[in-house]
Structures are given as C-alpha cells and as structure tokens.
Length: 207
Image (cartoon, rainbow, N blue to C red; front, top):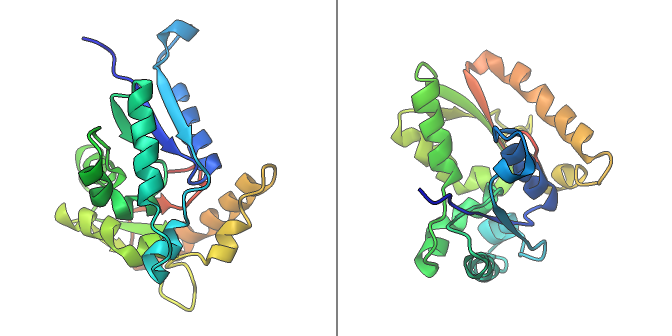
C-alpha cells in the first residue's frame, strides 16, 4: 500500500505547528531517516485571528485556510491536519471548499477517549475564548456521551483571555509559561470531577 503524505495546515500559531510535527517524528517507529513519514507543511502566520472571527465577526480565516489546503494538495499531500483548535470552528466550511480530506481534531479526541479510555465520561476543557464559546468541541464530545466541564467565571479558567495566551508566544519563555498556566488547572478542577483534561490552546505543545 502506498504511504500517505501528511499535509499540515500550520502557522496558527507557528509553535503549535512545530509541536505537532515534533510529535509525528517522536511517535514514528523509525531507526533511520528513510523510515520517517513524508510531511508537507504550509505555515502561514498571516491567517486572520480565529477567535476574533468567532466572537467579534472579524475577518474570516477561511480564504487563507483554503489557499493553504490547495497549496498542500499541489505539493502532493493526501490529507490535511490542522494543529489549531480554534480553526476547527470553521472546519465544515473549509471542507465544502476543498477536495482533500481534512481530519477533525474533535473527532480524533472523541474517538481516542471512546476507544482507549472508555471509562472516562467527563473531561475538562481548557481553550481560547473562541474555542469554548464556539461550542463545537463540547458538542462533538457530547455525541459520545462525554460531558465537558470548565471552571466558571470569575475564576477565568473557562477560557484564557487573549492577553494571557499571547504572553506564552515568546520563542524562549513561551513553553514554560504555557506549562505553568495549564498545570494549575487540572488540580483546581478536580473538585468538579473531570476524569481527564483536554488542552485546546494555540501554540500549546501538549495537545
């Protein structure tokens, strides 16, 4: 069987793209370069802000996302993955406008929980304001009878303000700050009973 070529629609943000590519490499059972998977990356950091589009009616990211998928297709990708949760709010619109298959992070997460952790019935969601308010992640998990919980305002863990997430994007100190922010949340949310936590933030290297 011919090996499929992975297309990554990236740049939303660049560190999330890097983190995802690192995971592909880390989880490929290769003993030499030639045994790794072929991956094509289109990293465009100029895609309009997804949260602003979801919450404020800002410029749609879909046209540049479509252009990125088309570029991946011309380069030889067989399917596309998007390491940006907020961008998945626009997934169905994107799918209608492109011919390459685009994998849903929501579907993959739900299927992973159902297949590998069938006893988990409640998860905690940490994401951008757009991801949480958009509701698509929660709706997809609910299809498999998985409840999603979040800490309510004013504790501000329902979604991190853009200013908080933006402070994590520096090339040297971004990852440690992100880890500190994410690390506080599961302990604090256990009182409400989540059995697992789902990270859904841009430039996160833990999704």
